[in-house]
Amino acid sequence: MTVDVRAVTESEFPDWLRALRTGFLRPPVVPDEDVADRLPHVDLARTLGAFDRDRAVATFRSFRQVVSTVGGGSLTADAITQVTVSPTHRRQGLLSRMMGADLAVAKERGDALATLIAAEYPIYGRFGFGPASWTTEWSVDLRRAGLDPRRSGRPGDGGRVDLADGDEIRKIGPDLHRRLAGVRAGVTDRTERGWAQGTGLGFQVDPWTEPYYAVYRSESGEPEGFVSYRSDDKWDDGKQPVNTATVRDLIAATPAAERALWLYLCSLDWVTTVRSGYRAPDDPLPELLPDPRAARAVSHADMLWVRVLDVPRLLEGRTYPVADALVLDVRDADGLAGGRFRLDASPEGATCVRTDASADLVLGVAELGTLAFGDHSAVRLARLGRVEEAVPGAAARAELLFRTALRPFSPDIF
Ligand SMILES: CC(=O)SCCNC(=O)CCNC(=O)[C@H](O)C(C)(C)COP(=O)(O)OP(=O)(O)OC[C@H]1O[C@@H](n2cnc3c(N)ncnc32)[C@H](O)[C@@H]1OP(=O)(O)O
Image 1 (tube, helix red, strand yellow):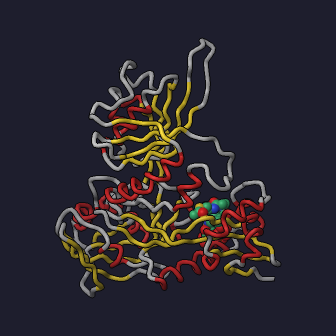
Image 2 (cartoon, rainbow, N blue to C red):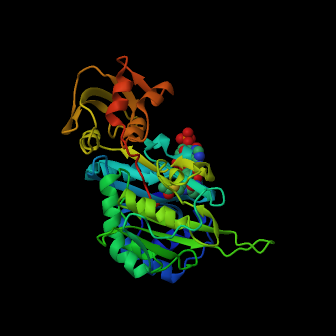
Protein backbone atom coordinates (compact mmCIF):
# COMPACT_ATOMS: atom_id res chain seq x y z
CA MET A 1 0.00 0.00 0.00
CA THR A 2 1.38 3.44 -0.90
CA VAL A 3 1.97 6.16 1.60
CA ASP A 4 -0.10 9.25 0.87
CA VAL A 5 1.49 12.71 1.26
CA ARG A 6 -1.07 15.54 1.58
CA ALA A 7 -2.37 18.40 3.69
CA VAL A 8 -3.97 17.29 6.95
CA THR A 9 -7.58 17.88 7.94
CA GLU A 10 -8.64 19.29 11.29
CA SER A 11 -9.74 15.87 12.53
CA GLU A 12 -6.34 14.40 11.61
CA PHE A 13 -4.42 17.15 13.42
CA PRO A 14 -4.18 15.33 16.83
CA ASP A 15 -2.76 12.25 15.10
CA TRP A 16 -0.36 14.49 13.16
CA LEU A 17 0.78 15.94 16.51
CA ARG A 18 1.32 12.44 17.84
CA ALA A 19 3.57 11.70 14.87
CA LEU A 20 5.39 15.01 15.46
CA ARG A 21 6.04 14.10 19.09
CA THR A 22 7.29 10.67 18.04
CA GLY A 23 9.76 12.19 15.58
CA PHE A 24 11.02 14.69 18.15
CA LEU A 25 11.39 11.98 20.82
CA ARG A 26 8.62 13.39 23.03
CA PRO A 27 6.08 11.15 24.78
CA PRO A 28 3.57 10.27 22.02
CA VAL A 29 0.50 11.42 23.93
CA VAL A 30 -1.22 14.60 22.80
CA PRO A 31 -3.03 16.64 25.48
CA ASP A 32 -6.33 18.19 24.29
CA GLU A 33 -5.02 21.62 25.43
CA ASP A 34 -2.07 21.25 23.07
CA VAL A 35 -4.40 20.68 20.10
CA ALA A 36 -6.71 23.55 21.13
CA ASP A 37 -3.77 25.92 21.63
CA ARG A 38 -2.08 25.19 18.29
CA LEU A 39 -5.00 24.70 15.91
CA PRO A 40 -6.04 28.37 15.53
CA HIS A 41 -2.45 29.31 14.60
CA VAL A 42 -1.82 26.61 12.02
CA ASP A 43 -2.59 26.91 8.31
CA LEU A 44 -3.83 23.39 7.57
CA ALA A 45 -3.30 23.89 3.83
CA ARG A 46 0.43 24.23 4.64
CA THR A 47 0.47 21.40 7.19
CA LEU A 48 1.56 18.28 5.35
CA GLY A 49 1.47 14.73 6.60
CA ALA A 50 2.30 11.33 5.23
CA PHE A 51 -0.36 8.74 5.96
CA ASP A 52 0.05 4.99 5.96
CA ARG A 53 -3.32 3.26 6.38
CA ASP A 54 -4.75 6.52 7.80
CA ARG A 55 -2.04 6.82 10.42
CA ALA A 56 0.26 9.86 10.30
CA VAL A 57 3.86 8.73 9.82
CA ALA A 58 5.48 12.02 8.81
CA THR A 59 4.94 15.72 9.51
CA PHE A 60 5.95 18.95 7.76
CA ARG A 61 4.57 22.45 8.17
CA SER A 62 5.30 25.83 6.63
CA PHE A 63 4.13 29.35 7.39
CA ARG A 64 4.56 32.91 6.17
CA GLN A 65 7.58 34.57 7.74
CA VAL A 66 9.22 37.96 7.36
CA VAL A 67 13.03 37.90 7.39
CA SER A 68 15.19 40.99 7.75
CA THR A 69 17.78 41.54 5.02
CA VAL A 70 21.01 43.50 4.87
CA GLY A 71 20.29 47.23 5.05
CA GLY A 72 17.05 47.14 7.04
CA GLY A 73 14.73 45.70 4.38
CA SER A 74 12.74 42.48 4.60
CA LEU A 75 11.55 39.58 2.45
CA THR A 76 8.69 37.12 2.74
CA ALA A 77 9.89 33.60 3.34
CA ASP A 78 8.37 30.15 3.34
CA ALA A 79 9.39 29.08 6.85
CA ILE A 80 9.61 25.31 7.26
CA THR A 81 9.21 23.63 10.63
CA GLN A 82 8.10 20.48 12.47
CA VAL A 83 9.70 18.11 9.99
CA THR A 84 9.61 14.50 11.14
CA VAL A 85 9.44 11.05 9.64
CA SER A 86 8.54 8.21 12.01
CA PRO A 87 11.28 5.61 12.58
CA THR A 88 9.17 2.97 10.79
CA HIS A 89 9.21 5.05 7.58
CA ARG A 90 12.61 6.77 7.52
CA ARG A 91 14.80 6.80 4.39
CA GLN A 92 11.92 5.99 2.06
CA GLY A 93 11.83 9.44 0.51
CA LEU A 94 9.00 10.95 2.60
CA LEU A 95 10.89 14.11 3.56
CA SER A 96 11.89 14.53 -0.09
CA ARG A 97 8.25 14.28 -1.18
CA MET A 98 6.99 16.76 1.44
CA MET A 99 9.83 19.20 0.74
CA GLY A 100 9.29 19.01 -3.01
CA ALA A 101 5.57 19.70 -2.64
CA ASP A 102 6.04 22.63 -0.24
CA LEU A 103 8.83 24.36 -2.19
CA ALA A 104 6.89 24.11 -5.46
CA VAL A 105 3.92 25.89 -3.85
CA ALA A 106 6.18 28.50 -2.22
CA LYS A 107 7.79 29.25 -5.57
CA GLU A 108 4.35 29.55 -7.18
CA ARG A 109 3.20 31.88 -4.38
CA GLY A 110 6.18 34.16 -5.06
CA ASP A 111 8.18 33.71 -1.86
CA ALA A 112 11.76 34.87 -2.42
CA LEU A 113 13.24 32.22 -0.16
CA ALA A 114 12.49 29.35 2.18
CA THR A 115 13.99 29.21 5.67
CA LEU A 116 14.46 26.69 8.41
CA ILE A 117 16.53 25.87 11.49
CA ALA A 118 18.16 22.49 10.86
CA ALA A 119 18.08 19.84 13.58
CA GLU A 120 21.13 18.24 11.96
CA TYR A 121 23.55 19.78 9.48
CA PRO A 122 23.54 17.06 6.78
CA ILE A 123 19.78 16.98 6.12
CA TYR A 124 18.94 20.06 4.03
CA GLY A 125 21.84 20.83 1.67
CA ARG A 126 20.45 18.33 -0.85
CA PHE A 127 17.27 20.41 -1.08
CA GLY A 128 19.23 23.59 -1.99
CA PHE A 129 19.45 25.08 1.51
CA GLY A 130 22.64 26.69 2.75
CA PRO A 131 23.41 28.04 6.22
CA ALA A 132 23.03 31.83 6.11
CA SER A 133 23.64 32.78 9.73
CA TRP A 134 25.75 31.29 12.48
CA THR A 135 25.43 31.39 16.21
CA THR A 136 27.75 31.27 19.20
CA GLU A 137 27.02 30.53 22.82
CA TRP A 138 29.39 31.63 25.59
CA SER A 139 29.84 30.48 29.12
CA VAL A 140 31.30 33.33 31.19
CA ASP A 141 33.33 32.48 34.30
CA LEU A 142 32.61 35.60 36.33
CA ARG A 143 35.37 34.82 38.83
CA ARG A 144 37.88 35.22 36.00
CA ALA A 145 36.20 38.10 34.16
CA GLY A 146 37.94 40.88 36.08
CA LEU A 147 34.80 42.91 36.74
CA ASP A 148 34.84 45.02 39.90
CA PRO A 149 32.43 43.33 42.34
CA ARG A 150 31.57 46.72 43.88
CA ARG A 151 30.21 47.96 40.56
CA SER A 152 26.56 48.96 40.68
CA GLY A 153 23.98 47.33 38.39
CA ARG A 154 23.20 50.82 37.10
CA PRO A 155 24.76 51.60 33.71
CA GLY A 156 27.21 54.49 33.63
CA ASP A 157 25.59 56.15 30.60
CA GLY A 158 22.61 57.83 32.28
CA GLY A 159 20.30 54.93 31.37
CA ARG A 160 18.83 52.44 33.81
CA VAL A 161 17.98 48.76 34.14
CA ASP A 162 14.65 47.86 35.74
CA LEU A 163 13.19 44.50 36.61
CA ALA A 164 9.99 43.78 34.69
CA ASP A 165 7.36 41.09 34.18
CA GLY A 166 5.93 39.17 31.24
CA ASP A 167 3.12 41.71 30.70
CA GLU A 168 5.62 44.50 30.18
CA ILE A 169 7.77 42.37 27.85
CA ARG A 170 4.74 41.56 25.71
CA LYS A 171 4.11 45.33 25.44
CA ILE A 172 7.60 46.59 24.66
CA GLY A 173 9.22 43.47 23.19
CA PRO A 174 7.70 43.45 19.69
CA ASP A 175 8.90 46.97 18.91
CA LEU A 176 12.42 46.20 20.18
CA HIS A 177 12.48 43.04 18.06
CA ARG A 178 11.43 45.06 14.97
CA ARG A 179 14.13 47.63 15.71
CA LEU A 180 16.69 44.84 15.95
CA ALA A 181 15.48 43.54 12.56
CA GLY A 182 16.11 47.02 11.18
CA VAL A 183 19.80 46.82 12.00
CA ARG A 184 20.61 43.11 11.61
CA ALA A 185 19.91 40.75 8.74
CA GLY A 186 18.62 37.25 9.45
CA VAL A 187 16.08 38.22 12.13
CA THR A 188 12.84 36.27 11.60
CA ASP A 189 9.64 37.91 12.84
CA ARG A 190 8.20 36.77 16.15
CA THR A 191 4.45 36.28 16.13
CA GLU A 192 2.04 37.41 18.85
CA ARG A 193 1.77 33.75 19.82
CA GLY A 194 5.57 33.55 20.01
CA TRP A 195 5.58 36.48 22.46
CA ALA A 196 2.78 34.90 24.51
CA GLN A 197 4.41 31.47 24.70
CA GLY A 198 7.84 32.92 25.36
CA THR A 199 6.46 34.75 28.38
CA GLY A 200 4.55 31.80 29.85
CA LEU A 201 1.05 32.18 28.37
CA GLY A 202 -0.86 29.36 26.67
CA PHE A 203 -0.02 25.67 26.52
CA GLN A 204 3.65 24.93 27.24
CA VAL A 205 5.29 21.77 25.93
CA ASP A 206 7.78 21.89 28.83
CA PRO A 207 6.80 22.87 32.38
CA TRP A 208 7.06 26.67 32.74
CA THR A 209 9.28 28.34 35.33
CA GLU A 210 8.85 32.10 35.47
CA PRO A 211 12.13 33.77 34.42
CA TYR A 212 13.50 37.13 35.55
CA TYR A 213 13.07 40.01 33.13
CA ALA A 214 15.11 43.20 33.02
CA VAL A 215 14.64 46.20 30.72
CA TYR A 216 17.27 48.78 29.74
CA ARG A 217 16.01 52.35 29.26
CA SER A 218 18.11 55.15 27.85
CA GLU A 219 18.53 58.45 29.70
CA SER A 220 15.36 59.74 28.03
CA GLY A 221 13.39 56.79 29.44
CA GLU A 222 13.03 54.99 26.09
CA PRO A 223 13.17 51.14 26.33
CA GLU A 224 16.06 49.94 24.17
CA GLY A 225 16.42 46.30 25.15
CA PHE A 226 15.38 43.54 27.49
CA VAL A 227 16.69 40.25 28.78
CA SER A 228 14.94 37.25 30.28
CA TYR A 229 16.99 34.75 32.22
CA ARG A 230 16.71 32.01 34.78
CA SER A 231 19.09 30.99 37.53
CA ASP A 232 19.65 27.78 39.40
CA ASP A 233 20.14 27.73 43.17
CA LYS A 234 23.44 25.99 44.03
CA TRP A 235 25.92 26.24 46.88
CA ASP A 236 29.18 24.35 47.05
CA ASP A 237 30.74 22.48 49.98
CA GLY A 238 32.53 25.63 51.10
CA LYS A 239 29.14 27.33 51.57
CA GLN A 240 29.80 29.49 48.52
CA PRO A 241 27.08 30.32 45.99
CA VAL A 242 27.90 28.86 42.54
CA ASN A 243 24.92 29.72 40.41
CA THR A 244 24.52 29.84 36.65
CA ALA A 245 22.30 32.49 35.10
CA THR A 246 21.08 31.32 31.71
CA VAL A 247 19.82 33.82 29.17
CA ARG A 248 16.63 32.80 27.36
CA ASP A 249 16.16 35.95 25.32
CA LEU A 250 18.19 39.12 24.98
CA ILE A 251 16.90 41.60 22.44
CA ALA A 252 18.82 44.86 22.24
CA ALA A 253 17.97 47.55 19.70
CA THR A 254 21.06 49.65 20.47
CA PRO A 255 24.70 48.97 21.45
CA ALA A 256 24.09 50.83 24.74
CA ALA A 257 21.32 48.37 25.64
CA GLU A 258 23.53 45.43 24.69
CA ARG A 259 26.34 46.68 26.91
CA ALA A 260 24.10 47.52 29.86
CA LEU A 261 22.22 44.22 29.82
CA TRP A 262 25.37 42.08 29.63
CA LEU A 263 27.03 44.03 32.43
CA TYR A 264 23.84 43.73 34.49
CA LEU A 265 23.86 39.94 34.02
CA CYS A 266 27.57 39.72 34.82
CA SER A 267 27.06 41.56 38.10
CA LEU A 268 24.33 39.40 39.65
CA ASP A 269 25.18 38.46 43.23
CA TRP A 270 25.53 34.71 43.88
CA VAL A 271 26.01 34.09 40.15
CA THR A 272 29.41 32.73 39.09
CA THR A 273 28.58 31.68 35.53
CA VAL A 274 26.53 33.34 32.80
CA ARG A 275 25.38 31.25 29.84
CA SER A 276 24.69 33.62 27.01
CA GLY A 277 22.22 31.56 24.97
CA TYR A 278 22.58 31.65 21.16
CA ARG A 279 24.05 34.97 20.00
CA ALA A 280 25.46 36.36 16.77
CA PRO A 281 29.15 35.37 16.56
CA ASP A 282 30.11 39.08 16.71
CA ASP A 283 28.18 39.73 19.91
CA PRO A 284 30.21 42.15 22.04
CA LEU A 285 29.93 40.06 25.24
CA PRO A 286 33.49 38.70 25.51
CA GLU A 287 35.15 42.06 24.96
CA LEU A 288 32.96 43.84 27.47
CA LEU A 289 34.89 41.90 30.09
CA PRO A 290 38.30 43.08 31.32
CA ASP A 291 39.45 39.51 30.60
CA PRO A 292 37.66 38.32 27.43
CA ARG A 293 39.08 34.82 27.92
CA ALA A 294 36.62 34.40 30.79
CA ALA A 295 33.98 34.00 28.05
CA ARG A 296 34.47 30.57 26.54
CA ALA A 297 32.59 29.75 23.34
CA VAL A 298 30.73 26.55 24.23
CA SER A 299 29.00 26.19 20.91
CA HIS A 300 29.42 27.66 17.46
CA ALA A 301 27.13 26.37 14.72
CA ASP A 302 24.93 27.14 11.76
CA MET A 303 21.59 28.79 12.61
CA LEU A 304 19.22 30.04 9.89
CA TRP A 305 19.26 28.07 6.61
CA VAL A 306 18.13 29.72 3.40
CA ARG A 307 16.81 28.13 0.20
CA VAL A 308 16.72 30.73 -2.56
CA LEU A 309 13.54 30.60 -4.65
CA ASP A 310 13.84 33.89 -6.55
CA VAL A 311 17.37 35.15 -7.22
CA PRO A 312 16.48 38.71 -8.41
CA ARG A 313 14.13 39.36 -5.47
CA LEU A 314 16.67 38.05 -3.00
CA LEU A 315 19.56 40.08 -4.39
CA GLU A 316 17.54 43.26 -4.99
CA GLY A 317 16.12 42.97 -1.47
CA ARG A 318 19.35 43.96 0.28
CA THR A 319 21.89 46.75 0.19
CA TYR A 320 25.57 46.54 -0.79
CA PRO A 321 28.51 48.40 0.72
CA VAL A 322 30.38 48.98 -2.58
CA ALA A 323 29.57 49.42 -6.28
CA ASP A 324 30.24 46.51 -8.65
CA ALA A 325 28.55 44.32 -11.24
CA LEU A 326 28.82 40.53 -11.34
CA VAL A 327 27.30 37.85 -13.53
CA LEU A 328 26.33 34.87 -11.38
CA ASP A 329 25.61 31.46 -12.87
CA VAL A 330 23.36 29.88 -10.24
CA ARG A 331 22.99 26.11 -10.47
CA ASP A 332 19.81 24.58 -9.05
CA ALA A 333 19.34 20.83 -9.55
CA ASP A 334 15.65 21.15 -8.62
CA GLY A 335 14.98 23.76 -11.31
CA LEU A 336 13.40 26.29 -8.97
CA ALA A 337 15.74 29.28 -9.05
CA GLY A 338 18.72 28.62 -11.31
CA GLY A 339 19.94 30.63 -14.26
CA ARG A 340 22.44 33.32 -15.16
CA PHE A 341 21.89 36.72 -13.53
CA ARG A 342 23.60 40.08 -13.74
CA LEU A 343 23.76 41.86 -10.40
CA ASP A 344 24.42 45.61 -10.61
CA ALA A 345 24.89 46.82 -7.09
CA SER A 346 25.94 49.96 -5.29
CA PRO A 347 25.21 51.55 -1.92
CA GLU A 348 22.32 53.39 -3.65
CA GLY A 349 20.51 50.21 -4.74
CA ALA A 350 20.72 47.07 -6.85
CA THR A 351 19.18 45.48 -9.91
CA CYS A 352 19.39 41.83 -10.79
CA VAL A 353 18.18 40.51 -14.15
CA ARG A 354 18.55 37.41 -16.25
CA THR A 355 21.35 37.64 -18.79
CA ASP A 356 23.12 35.69 -21.52
CA ALA A 357 26.46 37.33 -20.69
CA SER A 358 29.28 35.06 -19.63
CA ALA A 359 29.54 34.31 -15.93
CA ASP A 360 32.01 35.77 -13.45
CA LEU A 361 31.11 33.27 -10.74
CA VAL A 362 29.46 29.84 -10.89
CA LEU A 363 27.78 28.69 -7.72
CA GLY A 364 25.08 26.37 -6.40
CA VAL A 365 21.81 27.75 -5.11
CA ALA A 366 22.78 26.61 -1.59
CA GLU A 367 26.01 28.67 -1.77
CA LEU A 368 23.99 31.71 -2.84
CA GLY A 369 21.79 31.20 0.24
CA THR A 370 24.95 31.05 2.33
CA LEU A 371 26.17 34.38 0.92
CA ALA A 372 22.77 36.13 1.04
CA PHE A 373 23.03 37.82 4.45
CA GLY A 374 26.74 38.54 4.42
CA ASP A 375 27.79 35.93 6.97
CA HIS A 376 30.10 33.92 4.76
CA SER A 377 33.06 34.56 2.55
CA ALA A 378 32.87 34.00 -1.22
CA VAL A 379 36.67 33.63 -1.21
CA ARG A 380 36.46 30.87 1.39
CA LEU A 381 33.71 29.10 -0.59
CA ALA A 382 35.97 29.29 -3.66
CA ARG A 383 38.87 27.80 -1.65
CA LEU A 384 36.51 25.03 -0.56
CA GLY A 385 35.74 24.33 -4.22
CA ARG A 386 32.09 25.23 -3.74
CA VAL A 387 32.16 28.43 -5.79
CA GLU A 388 33.94 28.52 -9.15
CA GLU A 389 35.64 31.64 -10.45
CA ALA A 390 34.98 31.87 -14.21
CA VAL A 391 36.93 35.14 -14.13
CA PRO A 392 39.98 35.34 -11.83
CA GLY A 393 39.33 37.63 -8.88
CA ALA A 394 35.52 37.32 -9.09
CA ALA A 395 35.28 35.67 -5.66
CA ALA A 396 37.17 38.54 -4.03
CA ARG A 397 34.80 41.03 -5.71
CA ALA A 398 31.79 39.02 -4.53
CA GLU A 399 33.29 39.02 -1.06
CA LEU A 400 33.43 42.82 -0.98
CA LEU A 401 29.91 43.05 -2.36
CA PHE A 402 28.14 40.55 -0.11
CA ARG A 403 29.92 40.91 3.22
CA THR A 404 28.50 43.16 5.94
CA ALA A 405 29.98 45.01 8.90
CA LEU A 406 27.48 43.45 11.32
CA ARG A 407 26.98 39.71 11.05
CA PRO A 408 23.39 38.46 10.76
CA PHE A 409 21.63 37.39 13.94
CA SER A 410 18.73 34.94 14.13
CA PRO A 411 17.54 34.96 17.74
CA ASP A 412 14.34 32.99 17.14
CA ILE A 413 14.11 29.22 16.83
CA PHE A 414 11.01 28.10 14.92
C1 LIG B 1 13.17 22.20 10.09
C2 LIG B 1 13.06 21.04 11.06
O1 LIG B 1 12.00 20.72 11.49
S1 LIG B 1 14.48 20.25 11.54
C3 LIG B 1 13.91 18.71 12.24
C4 LIG B 1 14.22 17.53 11.34
N1 LIG B 1 13.68 16.35 12.01
C5 LIG B 1 14.44 15.49 12.71
O2 LIG B 1 15.65 15.61 12.79
C6 LIG B 1 13.68 14.39 13.45
C7 LIG B 1 14.36 13.02 13.28
N2 LIG B 1 14.62 12.67 11.90
C8 LIG B 1 13.61 12.44 10.99
O3 LIG B 1 12.43 12.56 11.31
C9 LIG B 1 13.99 12.01 9.59
O4 LIG B 1 15.16 11.23 9.65
C10 LIG B 1 14.24 13.18 8.61
C11 LIG B 1 12.98 14.07 8.57
C12 LIG B 1 15.43 14.02 9.03
C13 LIG B 1 14.54 12.61 7.21
O5 LIG B 1 13.38 12.01 6.66
P1 LIG B 1 13.45 10.85 5.58
O6 LIG B 1 12.07 10.65 5.06
O7 LIG B 1 14.16 9.69 6.15
O8 LIG B 1 14.34 11.50 4.44
P2 LIG B 1 14.38 11.01 2.92
O9 LIG B 1 14.14 9.52 2.87
O10 LIG B 1 13.51 11.88 2.08
O11 LIG B 1 15.90 11.33 2.64
C14 LIG B 1 16.36 12.11 1.61
C15 LIG B 1 17.86 12.02 1.58
O12 LIG B 1 18.38 12.67 2.75
C16 LIG B 1 19.20 11.77 3.48
N3 LIG B 1 18.99 12.04 4.89
C17 LIG B 1 17.81 12.08 5.52
N4 LIG B 1 17.99 12.37 6.82
C18 LIG B 1 19.31 12.52 7.00
C19 LIG B 1 20.10 12.80 8.13
N5 LIG B 1 19.55 12.99 9.35
N6 LIG B 1 21.43 12.88 7.96
C20 LIG B 1 21.99 12.67 6.74
N7 LIG B 1 21.27 12.39 5.63
C21 LIG B 1 19.95 12.31 5.77
C22 LIG B 1 18.73 10.40 3.06
O13 LIG B 1 19.71 9.43 3.25
C23 LIG B 1 18.40 10.61 1.61
O14 LIG B 1 19.59 10.59 0.86
P3 LIG B 1 19.66 10.09 -0.65
O15 LIG B 1 18.71 10.96 -1.41
O16 LIG B 1 21.08 10.28 -1.02
O17 LIG B 1 19.23 8.66 -0.60
